Length: 347
Ligand SMILES: *Cc1c(COP(=O)(O)O)cnc(C)c1O
Image 1: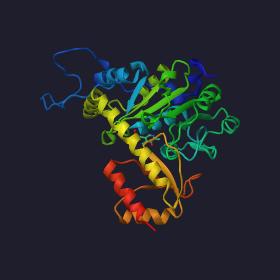
Image 2: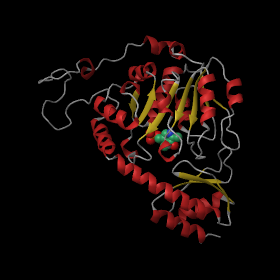
Image 3: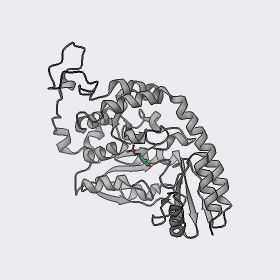
Image 4: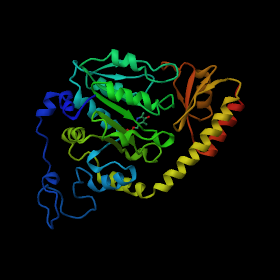
């Protein structure tokens, strides 16, 4: 079991020794009348001042909605920023590696590739669960980060919580649980387990259920030790003020998000039933997310047919364990009806 002291041992030496950039807004955080410290334009455009580098106001609001203490929150330019920073904090290029469990989200591999960090893969089992034994046996002192995605993209299923607990207890490194789709799942978020696991990082995002993908806002929840590392390496003003304001507006309309989720879940159930009976559909995998992985007879042909009808789905048929599969996002009722009408007329 990893304890708080071991976290420091996983960090790259240059990051431990790094003296972070001290921005003007960071050095002075109190109330004042006149700010002559940051070389800003003094004329009020509504946007002439640098934003709060640690986004206190937004974190306070998020903390209430998500029941995660402010000190355990990092906010980034999409959860993709958190993924990138984690790799740069913990992985020494060409020496350390990360572990991913394909088929899964593509950014772990891309971020590692940019950082010149090796990716070791341990395939999910055919029912899309982690092979815990193979992960633990295949890892060593250079296995710095294990990326789990639950509900998983593109398979849509939850990872069994018992397996996640086992990995959190036994993996000697950082365990990231990407919960981009947690709002659509019946399972509880691991964000409530932070006190138990100092090596746990939970990723969530405003891009899916929360409806503001264009804004680019993602969060990482972790121990204060790990949050301090994020804050040390992030760009000083990584979140602009427009993002912070928009997120606070959305957080204040929490019921709207719940209503969307309810409708999307109803539509998902409807689509699942309707897709299953189509003659060319071999399987619709059970989903805890806002999409369905669907195995069909000739995925490339069907994909092209849908494109011709101006309906775009994701062709995942070349991805491991997803042979024959298209990934279909649940749309509005009208969009789903048009999709189904097109599919019924196909063949
Ligand atoms: C969509 C998605 C994200 C979202 O990333 P953002 O950068 O926050 O938009 C993260 N993880 C997974 C698995 C996703 O599918």
